[in-house]
Image (cartoon, rainbow, N blue to C red; front, side, top):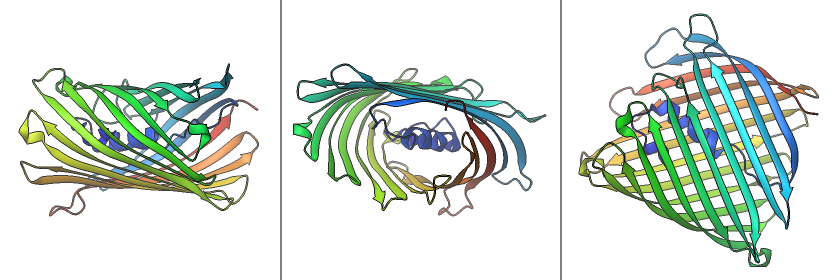
Length: 332
């Protein structure tokens, strides 16, 4: 869902970070996997907006994931993460926590999946303040004897609660789509969706409809790639909020050896307000390199940036971040 274009009261940097967490967090495609527990520390250097001098900071993070088999060819998966920054003297504390749970079970010859998750922050990622974004999905997929094309339908919902409370709202909608895997190294997913988003503290109700597309695959033995795109039309009871929006993101991963992994991501968001004849757009990129120094110790360096309205008459608003750190796997 294109929540990156709907959460106008939360900063664009916050939304883009959430999008990359939720979209590129990894699929629960493996039916069983031993628990993964990772903890780490990092240092970062950030330059925002018109600042000439950047700010340095320290932080720590943790990750847990687990997949297990259930009876009758079912499986369950869960992942959770936490990140704290602002641990350097004189810095403001920021945090983000995520949780996602999925249960998949056969339904006759087909499959039923129930999933839910939440991204939340008590202190905020930046000056936006606290927020919570719970979401859920119930999906029914036609397996069709494990043919390459598998249609599905789902009910989706989410709640957005944040500071200030004037933007709090909830969504309920339906989605229909299909998965197509013509060969092991290539998979397509496409869908259409529609639903109602209702503001809690306003007399506002939006009809939100859109299309989604995701393609991912392998390039030989060492490279993988993913493309995600979606478009959205919003018809609001407040005519000034009628809009057309779109998002496109791409990811390329390369693992030339067992110890080294490099990832590059880029994204583009645009929202056009019909009544005002105005648009907002943001360009992002992220580069990351992970190196396994020892069997349970990983070093990483990451650079990401965003540029809001770079093609407007003004210079736009940009953010730049450089991060480096160490992760330790707590489970052999």
